[in-house]
Image 1 (tube, helix red, strand yellow):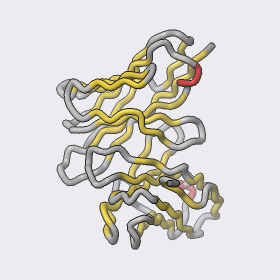
Image 2 (spheres, chains in turn orange, green; image 1 turned 90 degrees about the vertical axis):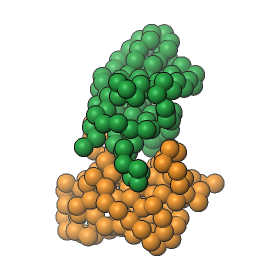
Image 3 (tube, helix red, strand yellow; image 1 turned 30 degrees about the horizontal axis):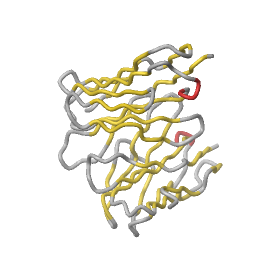
Length: 113
Length: 113
């Protein structure tokens, strides 16, 4: 049982390049989330999904797109990377009850130059 | 807009001492979480608090929730070096259909020998 995994762990992009971050969970969780964490700050929600085929915007969605084609996977895309998107990205999943805790992946450290 | 404030942001304490981290939030919520993050690592769930007066304890850590005061505390008893980490509180949004969490900025705890 791997829990929540993220690919890649590290990535360096040039401004304007695109990339996709993959999050996978093997716990059969309904809800999945993408957060970003910047130095000295808590996590901020980018997008989330409450089920296969559904997505919704979080607090800081601009510049990102997501897709949830399969229940176990949640993809985060950057179409045209900007230096402001340099951050650590965490994916999380949660069972289908609001009161349960979220389980986090190991994170992806992204640098945009 | 839900705001979550933690204090202190930095805490340096001697082994064996007690201290409390505070988490204040701005609007009514029915769930509050505490997470721990070690440097360069992901977030680990510590406590889930769901009702007024809830108290949970695990080892040297005890968390409590006062929903009327919109305040949660994380109390550290007889600190040891292994507790050095950043601690985040996260508050669930009050909307019935939302699953979002808003995180505090974190408290970076260093336990000195």
